[in-house]
Image 1 (cartoon, helix red, strand yellow):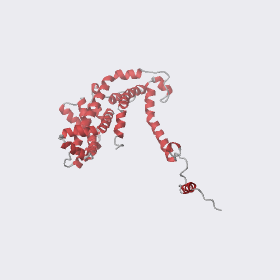
Image 2 (cartoon, one colour):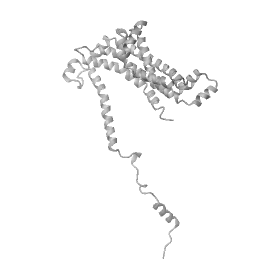
Image 3 (cartoon, rainbow, N blue to C red):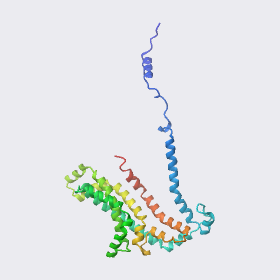
Image 4 (tube, rainbow, N blue to C red):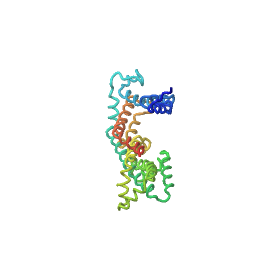
Length: 306
């Protein structure tokens, strides 16, 4: 005698039979698979890279507060037995650090603002204005970024000597504004070249002029990119050494990197004072980075979300 199974039991068995194998296996917690050998290798590489980046900061910080005798006894890696501030005080008074710091802030800040402004105007004409020979002009700006600074020293020296701007902070401001704007123009012209034409046509139909389109439409949309350029232009100009050393010969016009170099002699160098000077030169850039950290994060990730 054959027993008739209920319809519900039959359908349940059929559903179980048709269920793919492995579908009922529990997933790993967190939704992530077990790390492979490549993942561990990349993690180890990141840790080593982080140590190599942090090591110079550790050496500067530790040796800035050592006395010469403490440095001679404990070496480079040893911690200071007592806090020694004479190196910081000596560098502060020798180069008149507040004045040198103001020179670097003024030059870097002015260059960053002027270079971004010039880059926007150039890129607007090249990327959106669609001028003739656009590709060749962009290539020219790219080649300008590849020129070594050593090849520019003599013609720039002769030019600024002739116009009376030698040993003047404005000579360095003009040079770096042009150099940074060349890179900014190359970058922004590619960005503005892909700008939606519908938005520009809608603004023109509403009666907006070219200046209004630039400052009320394009500038607000590209503000994250411009903020990143502003931060990078400031840092790049701050770290420049060769051109400020050549064109700012007087102590009153020196920048922080140039002022640090005056502590190094041909045969003798005070390591603790040099470390203290490097620490004083590093602190403003760290503060600047911490202030504009969110600006960098927003600008870099602005194109990641559509």
